[in-house]
Image (tube, rainbow, N blue to C red; front, top):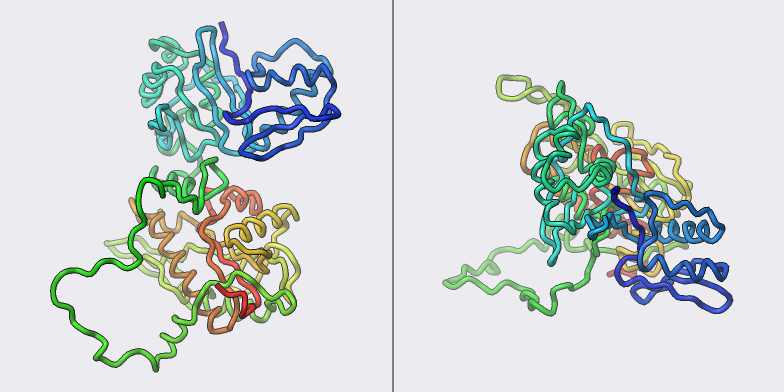
Length: 468
């Protein structure tokens, strides 16, 4: 018998009926109003708590069923549902969407091809469950049958569908189709080999740990809780503000001249994060130009290498240091309010020292600005949000093992450079801890693993009393 695919509420989500035939989903103390439904649809809606079969498709085509399916799709867009793959003797696996637009598909697999597990897929314990994850996938598979771990191990070597069917405990073609649809599996191209068969040329350059770090330490491609949650405060006490001193004699440095006469030191000490901006006197296009000129403009073109030790590499140096002279970072400005610069998204062309407008939907720009406001904990929207993106291949082509770590170091030095320029110009600036890499990919139409968001900073006209 074929496995069934069932849609149901996430744990903790419930359906409530209010006056007038209004149905609402309740979760985490919140409410999502689904709308007004007929009496029969309200009666049948209870099936969303136990499971609505979506594959194989049901025969019924009643208006009430259409109402329930429409409600289920809306719930899915809000991340409130999961999908169970089940057989007569119980669940096989549960799919937990990690992105709001996930909807399971069961593509027809080619009998003549060999399929293999993605090198980015990994199996781990989560609480008392086993889950199969991948930074490329928009869904997590929660394994309900211990035999599936054997299948995952079997998939480490390319195999035909006939070979997989012959494996002990084979769970059915539906699971393989779902794994393939989520990029947990891929079809091998024998002419290319394993690494090159999966994805594009940009993906070849990624190490497993780097892509996982990029996806899981940002937002947009997973459903994990993030931010200042104090998740372990009840288990571990906070570390002391100042590290306890090492034992032994100390050399007193206060007897030497200090840096009170240093303009550089004064600038460093005046630098701080500003979360409130003066909309009555917003940042100007001239100030944006000066900020970018001082912090990020290309100042020299050079060629390095080209000998027996390393291949030739062209570099375009900026005012900040970059490991291996990679200079992989690009700047994109999301402008809400700037005197002389229309609202929109712009790429900073560091070679021409110019801003190039990129057409984006208003809702996308609003989402980026809203996320920045939330990340800052500010009462008002920022005037400009600078997204630092990385053309990862510039670093990965040379470095292995620590390429992504190196990118983040570059983000840090660029953030400090922008901070110092802003301090000198008496502008407000605030570095942000995390950004939505999927939103940036949608706005630029660039895959997240080719050129992705790695850092953000808000800037604007400073309000002295609003500084933090």
